[in-house]
Length: 106
Image (cartoon, rainbow, N blue to C red):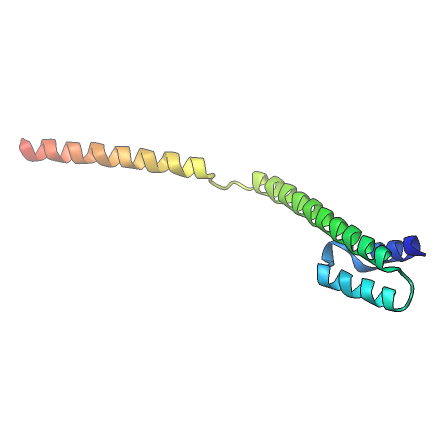
């Protein structure tokens, strides 16, 4: 019986969307109805929470890959490019100041 309830919960609830509180509510309800024992309820809660965390991690990883892949196709300046340009601008400013000083002296 426990196995059937577990499978139904996994397929019917969307594991990644489950919060610990919701899982605990469901387990308490099933225990109260006599569908699960206390021990099975605890095991059910732990397994559902673990699966939810794993699903969230997998979803995060997939999302990061998609975003990274998409951004690599868009011509955007990267942080290192911006730093390099700032450095170049600062160098040019110093050169301009040096030239201005030379012209003022002459």
